[in-house]
Length: 379
Picture 1 (tube, rainbow, N blue to C red):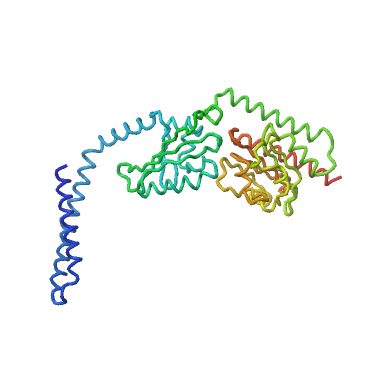
Picture 2: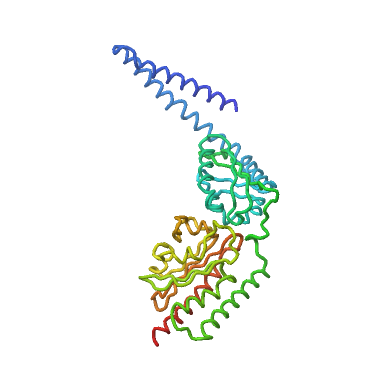
């Protein structure tokens, strides 16, 4: 410690001498060689004395305290994980580096999934820009901040986010520590959101998928449809409600035509998007639909980052924001490499996000739907 303080004093004296040399630039021209000689002397002093001294201090500190530092870091990590307050450690762009157990329960997001992803992506769309801006301000040293946000899975519950700057040991950049607390009378819990699923739950979901596949097959084979649009509508009604909150069907590929839109029946808020808003949309203005029709590949998105991915309604508002979409599936109906149409499914609010297993089941159903549509063309 004494050597470190001595080095600091020596460095401070050097900085003061450099300031005097800068001020000496205004001396008469005849005296400038003396100033130049002094500057060269100071540079030699840094190269020959201060830099080797710094290297010795760094090497000594690393060798002498590495074991103690590791123990200290492990202790701090343990304390961070077990604190009862929901905590997240982020960088200046809100990318999560650590999420403690309390924050996992509070947000309903697994720590392994959240790490490496922006925390702003788990918030409601209107809150994301403000949260990113306040985080950047804290990271650049403008002081602690606090703001009210809403989790995308529970948009009705206000959450108080308190941000403070933190400089982790041995790191060059400032991190931001955020504390999440309920701003209302009732603290949100993760009971209704995604969490560790027991084996019984997995079995139940698998059985539900099998029932859905059976219902789709029965609907497609029961009565012969007369038009391709009728096939799409029949498939959409099987998926609506039990599998997705919104089902949007578009026929064609090069020229898309919207045939069916089914949404929630209990929309009381006038700000909510309506089925008529989506029916009036041009499918060509929905990037997700266009990409599926062109590329023929399924898109699965959880907490979609791009609010314009499904275009905008007549008022100019992003559909995904107004509908509070928390996960989506955009599935092309493909047969022998040719796209017959596109089905887009939304889940909203606290409903569990689409899983990979559900996307695979939907991919299987899409081939059956495409086959039923293609049969009409052969008649």
